[in-house]
Length: 310
Image (cartoon, rainbow, N blue to C red):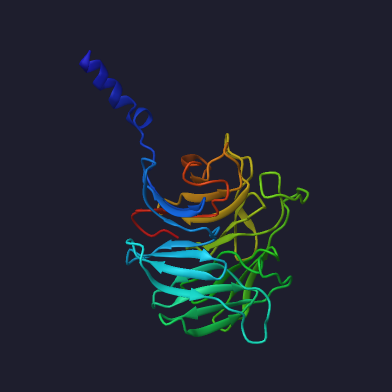
């Protein structure tokens, strides 16, 4: 009998005993920021009433958190705030301001995108603005001027303009050097934040190593990869994954394996909040935790992945 079992194991090890990925997840929703381990246990949390749109675990072990419409803080694991930036109306502007994206840069500065002010700023440890880039916005709205923004290795900025439904790339001087306008992909526009809602309110974008851009289409309910010429060469559609419906597609992470982590916000408790999918659209991991988080989990980061994560 033992020989028979060993022979069977040699024939089917990858099928019978393939292990799912095990990730720790950092995210914000339900009034707190939390880190959930691979067993589903909350191992760290702190109150955060604001529905965050960006988040980061820094190389120094601290966390960069979105704690209010105009505020970001750097917090130690011991929950001590060691740096704060608060956006205020720029000179000559008296309207509302909101932050939806930020990034700690390699030189120690922090990039912040300010909706309402329609600008990107880079600020130092004293909160002093040392660089400012004006943004081109066709439909100004302090809540929708921007969503995810990232400074690229080239020094350019990749900006998701939610209200315009456009991803624009700006060079260091603020000139738009590339843009991509989302479309409705042949479906009628419809209101709502859940799976029934459909539009061009783009949320996230990443520049891939080969020069293409991966776009989380927000309420476009899909992920697309486009070339510099604007040609779509890959997509993940709303109901393409068995048993999963995409709603407001938010954050993206590209793993060293090439797999993609997709944030699936407002999709309801029948659907996972995070999905890892291969390039041939096989689901290899999902995260669904409606006890710790809720239906408004807009931003998350998986942790402890070896290698470069985009």
